[in-house]
Length: 377
Image (tube, rainbow, N blue to C red; front, side, top):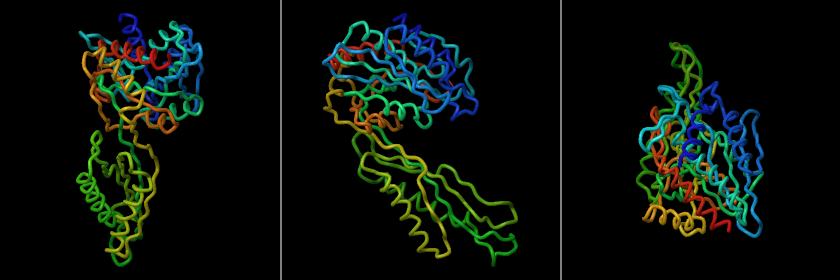
């Protein structure tokens, strides 16, 4: 326990704020070097994947003796920003809690899977155990997107914090831009101008109505329904002019079965209805970023194996859950790797006070190691 806690302290002490979230953020360079050196010293074969300069991920393999299945363990190294926090990179322990930025999301999990990698190397399992410590999960997940181009496995565990529940589904999302076009004119010439901002009003009403329809629709047992909201809006040139353009950014959260084509068709239907009511409305919609939802069957081998070892360690059957936020599990699943999500408890992800349960970090280490021992053989 002491060694695992010390490893976690060292990880939290490294500033790894994602620079795409916070301009000037430290990024993953220093923490990737630390992780790579630690795993190399533990005897794993280590490689660096750098899909974008300065944004490295670490791939480490505890080579198996042969004849077993391979298991990939995934955790991200980057964190969100630290505005409003006091001493975010000075980890402190109070009882069972270790405080500091990234302790919960998700350096507690990172420490656990690193320790599992070291233990697997000593045990010499039949199958390979692969540790992927990735960059950029908090923004665009370029880390895991790069990793799946280089490695594969028979199954994977994404060690995102789940409070010791077993997560088998989460939502995806689509970001979309809607633009309305008006006609610029002097504010005193309504006969010449068309107000692009006012034209967006009908579309906003349609977005609100679609949100109500989704919320009232069929609910998936672990995820509920899809949703959408207007995130940002901008437009106009100055006070005394009719605005020529207005842009609305929408986030659409999706559940399994809601494809990009479905989402885009729903937004086009809103625009078509608004245009039918107002022939002067000119509007377009385009998707700018897509992350698919994720699900795996509750009886998939990697799920049942994790659940069985968790039940033994915890003394009770772990809860099956679905997550609302998107995770790298979707990228692994899209690459054909059966994936489950399992990690420790705590609180304060993206908040000004963040902590992880040290006891649960230790339990996660034990459960994931037992899973690897069985799965890899």
